[in-house]
Length: 163
Ligand code: IDP
Image 1: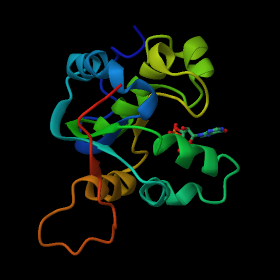
Image 2: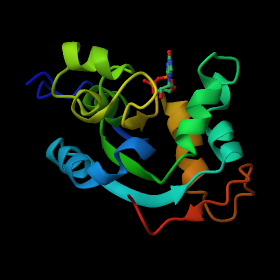
Image 3: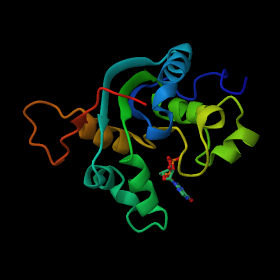
């Protein structure tokens, strides 16, 4: 299929992925796809973001028309955040999740996670960091390194139920 081509880069990278609130119950199928692609899952956390935490995570989209809807959606239920490691992980993970709009994903990348599990432009199943810089910031957001003063005020309400 379209994602079995050679890795886009041979550089070992870290990236941050999120299973968004709309597809928390598809956890096992998404994880299977991740392992099938050869990524290593090195950190993982299930939590529910407050509105302000979701806003902080998506701060670069503050001025966008879809910002409020995005924050509402991302704080509406549990998310599962994880760190992935692999060759070219940043681009390869984004290739596996597919185009932002789930409808576009279904026509252009039918094997992608957004095509398989997403609903529309907002409820699109998964997140993936778009650059090395974002990956570093987003990994630190969910998995702050010890001894580093946290810029994030995120508290991450623990979540034990996912329905
Ligand atoms: P990406 O997640 O594919 O990198 P971004 O442009 O960074 O896409 O947007 C972040 C998130 O905001 C998307 O994953 C989606 O949930 C939401 N979003 C993006 N564009 C739109 C839009 O045009 N309408 C509604 N929601 C959007």
